[in-house]
Amino acid sequence: MEYVVEISDLSKDYETGFWKKKRVRALDGLSLNVRGGQIFGFLGGNGAGKTTTIKLLMSLIFPTEGSAKILGRDISDVQMHSRIGYCPENPYFYDYLTAIELMDHFGRLFGYDAAQRRLRTEELLMSVGLHEKDWKKQLRKYSKGMLQRVGLAQSLINEPEIIFMDEPMSGLDPVGRREIRELIAGLREKGVTIFMSTHILSDIEALCDEVAILRNGKLAASGNLSDLLENSGEERVLEVSVQGVTADTIREAVEFIAGATIFSKPNGANIQILDENDIDAVLKITREAGGHLTSIQPLKQSLEELFVKETSSDPKKLK
Ligand SMILES: Nc1ncnc2c1ncn2[C@@H]1O[C@H](COP(=O)(O)OP(=O)(O)OP(=O)(O)O)[C@@H](O)[C@H]1O
Ligand SMILES: [Mg+2]
Image (cartoon, rainbow, N blue to C red; front, side, top):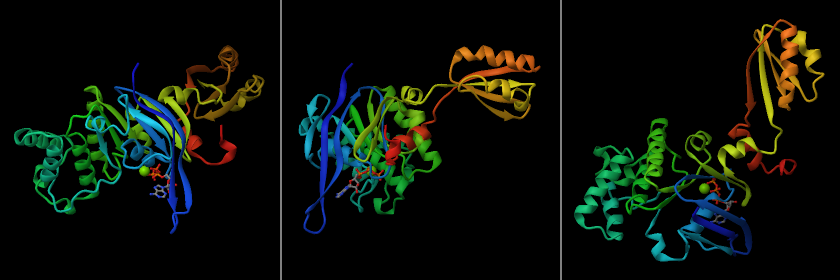
């Protein structure tokens, strides 16, 4: 399958301090390939380097080392940039323009004629859920969530093949988040690739196919989201739930099984085992004590645990 984003060994140092003498490494040797047609989640805690990476890909800042390609073209290729969209972290536009004027301006940049511009403007402002009564308001009177929506609308004006969104849900209320989620999912259905940075875990779970997790400017983990959650290096744990017995009556027998742990719950117990061959033993113990089995399920690591583990800078937790 074809990669639409290929990042190789990309690093960025910022020069800081009054004399620009100090260098801060914001991104450190990032290599990453992203397949087309999906929603790719670019995760990491505050300051991990997400915005830096996206700005490098957009050629708004320049790499200290390394290179990257989008749609098979080097990120310095100007023509390639007309085929992609970018929704910045904090959209900041010309304050005195209205949403309609702003969209018209971007439409002109992409060479659309007046009729096309009007059509696309209306279509897009509608699709991001911006009320018609606000279209002619100056952007300086917009709330954060409204600006976020205009930012999204402008990133779609050129019908991009791939869109880079830096925290598209930030500043949106729950209803707004759901609307934008639906919009993003709809774009994927049309074959658009979305590269989206976020730390809103529920959005990642609802939308993303594959993810990459950055920690301190380095790649901490990447891959298919469900694989990452399942094969996170933790032991696979099966949870057997039983009823009609108390944990206390079977605890001694259960603890004979290597690696088994038992937890009591109302009218029964949950028994966690590491080996599926031990299911029979648990069943036998339960039946002999007059109880019965209600369910067996693998315990998945939650996205939150994975995120905390992979974004923590605690050296003990480094893989
Ligand atoms: N213009 C800059 N000058 C100096 N340092 C910077 C600059 N921009 C970012 N940094 C530093 O680079 C690191 C990465 O920042 P970046 O904005 O890429 O993180 P992020 O993952 O987008 O974080 P957030 O989730 O808070 O948006 C941080 O340590 C930040 O302080
Ligand atoms: Mg950021």
